[in-house]
Image 1: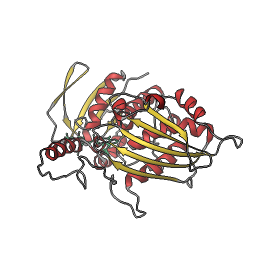
Image 2 (image 1 turned 45 degrees about the horizontal axis):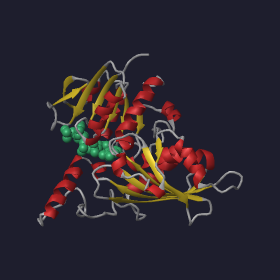
Image 3 (image 1 turned 135 degrees about the vertical axis):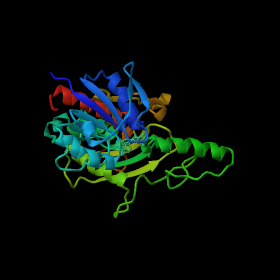
Image 4 (image 1 turned 45 degrees about the vertical axis):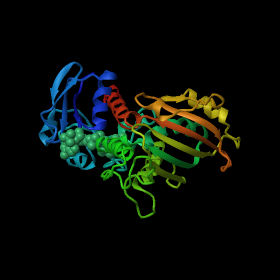
Length: 342
Ligand SMILES: NC(=O)c1ccc[n+]([C@@H]2O[C@H](COP(=O)([O-])OP(=O)(O)OC[C@H]3O[C@@H](n4cnc5c(N)ncnc54)[C@H](OP(=O)(O)O)[C@@H]3O)[C@@H](O)[C@H]2O)c1
């Protein structure tokens, strides 16, 4: 099997740094690797696998001879470089939302819909962070019981909005504690000691773009019918890292039988990428502090939903930078290499 020439585009960003770290952790095999950013960070140094590399400014020529690009440099940068990468025979695994809903672009969670990778035409998209963790939890349940209806409420950490947002939470909190004024730049409202019911811009239907990403990406990844009722409310919370989700799901069920919390607990306990912590008598449920910095998607508070006919509610927590972006990107990269798809 040939080893690929790899580029990491956006290597200085929050997600790019994680991609770099996880590429080393997962032992991705490569012929060569390079690290790209904008002109701002070009020339800075980074250490990877004990060797020093210099960040290069991304230009179309940067992708000459590159087989796989792991990109996390924003939608407009991906839109600019993806055609250049594809033209040169390369493959881009993209973290932005630029191509996710394109018909010709597989939207993939490694371990959930790997076979979709075979359909790529040079671009593979990584789902939104809140969709990613949800898919790992829902896929085995959908396979067994069939999803009929889904309602998701997200509580999203600031790291999901990049480095500037992490700094804003820290600075705003410090200013607030000192009684000083702080001018917020990343968020529409102060993020310290607050919950903001807006992530991304509003759409015509009153939902935000972030909420509609969860709705549309879920249908695409799980191959659900277009008219499956799904609703999402996404809120930003003053947590540095780790997204939480309250999930209410109604199932078709098997032979009219009611789905029980015990069955769901059993299925998720054996599911790929999931760790169940569900022992309410001993306050056993996952929080963002359990999830930040590690790979599993944690699920707890599994119970019968009181509003649906055949429904289950649960709580789902994960490291948004890892499973929601970088870990999935690197897992896809490994799959692409294993499946000989570059
Ligand atoms: N944060 C998350 O949880 C998350 C999850 C899923 C997807 N994403 C997506 O991943 C992307 C990156 O997010 P992030 O949070 O890592 O952002 P970030 O911390 O702001 O990092 C952005 C990166 O892109 C580079 N960049 C910006 N403009 C560029 C250009 N014109 N050419 C080349 N490189 C350029 C930056 O380089 P410089 O250092 O030179 O500025 C930096 O390395 C976004 O599309 C975001 O929507 C993020």
